[in-house]
Image 1 (cartoon, rainbow, N blue to C red):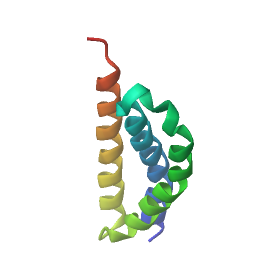
Image 2 (image 1 turned 135 degrees about the vertical axis):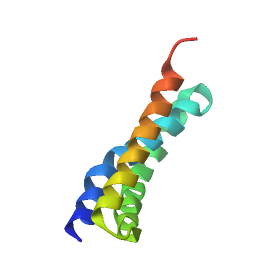
Image 3 (image 1 turned 120 degrees about the vertical axis):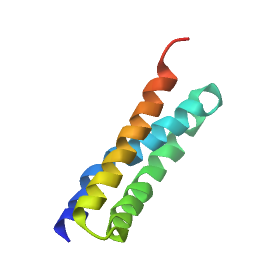
Image 4 (image 1 turned 90 degrees about the horizontal axis):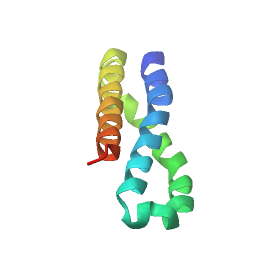
Length: 84
C-alpha cells in the first residue's frame, strides 16, 4: 500500500506538471492567457493521480504505469519543442 501511495505522490507530481505544460504549449499563443487557470488546476490533477494510484493491483504496477505515463508525456512535450 505504501508503494502505491509513493507512486501517486512522487510520480503524480511531475505527471500533472507535464500534462499542464503540454496543454499550455498546444493552446493558441502558447497559453499565456491560461497560465493562472492551469496553476489552479495543478493541485486537483495531482490529487487525482494520487487517488488513481490505488486503482492498481499492486505497487509495482502503479510505479510502472505511472512512470511510463511520465516518460510518454515528457517525450511528447520534448518532441513538440524540437525545431522543424
